[in-house]
Length: 89
Image 1 (spheres, helix red, strand yellow):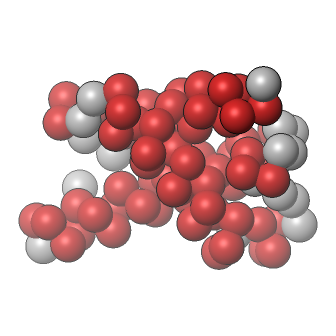
Image 2 (spheres, rainbow, N blue to C red):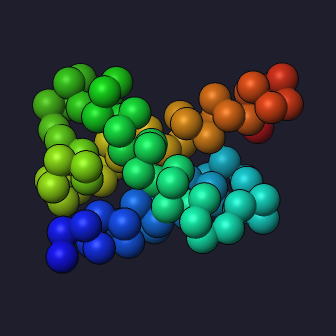
């Protein structure tokens, strides 16, 4: 059951990150899930020690962990946009 919640929350976070980065029209539901989950991994690696919280990948569904996971997804999309286009959007 945790896996399904993890996928759903990752999809929602990836969708919100794609709206923030204005890439929503370019990616579908599956890519939103991938961005949310990989962004949570990135946020856990980069940001979780700074904010002393976990991420959704660590089964920590607090407000802080959701924000760290969302920030990780936004950073991931910014890096992908930078590599693909040469400038962040």
